[in-house]
Image (cartoon, rainbow, N blue to C red; front, side, top):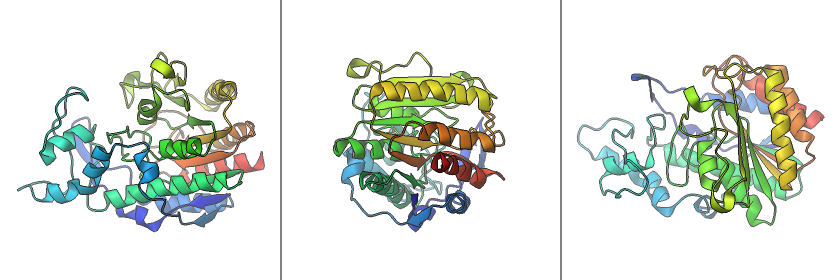
Length: 340
């Protein structure tokens, strides 16, 4: 299996993260890269750099207004007297239809949904190449490979079309799915991150050409709180094309795999001919976010079950935070897929 990664993805080095009113070190550290690269290589992956496909595939998902913001906000922020070292919003609109301000402070509040997505000098470049890794991964699969792994970091599934959030800036999984769609395939996105892929859901919620399925910890008392509930099925033309499968906190391998069976059945019913796996490894029992209790052998069973679809598959890295087993869990899921 080919793995796609670009060294410029190291340039996003977030320092701050506010949780429960406390300013803490940001869990989405660049050091994840070395751990994940080692895990991919242990699974037999050959690592290669992405090809620059330009802004087109990214702009197919994200608004020009939002991309302009991401490319320029850090330089604008540095011109504010007394501003902090990272772009972190302190005010937000009540809804997306409110007026769009001219100020950097106001636009940060409009385009950054929470305090977990600080922007610094290297953020745009890292996010751009993270997205290009997903695009190139899609192109590898389009070229005839059975599967590929995109080490997309920073991750993406909490990013909406014009809104960053939850460590995410560009929605890499959505960009990859749109790439497949543009090449005549019928993609489904399967999100197995411990957190609901609210940005991915939002991007495709009114559409019927991409199926979105997410297995995650119940958001009633877990991030992202406002999205990911079972009754959210899509709207308009997209009604019935979004499936959320929330799990009780602490759900183990057996419970996760039983729910995965239901997710895979929906993908089969959709008639998908390619699958994008939004691969969060933070469902692990020892992950710092402690939402679910999947084991390292359980990840191998997840990979094998996905392989059972018999479809071309692109794994796009989402969450999974620094812990002793992070690399082993990636090796496990990719190895389980390959061996099956």
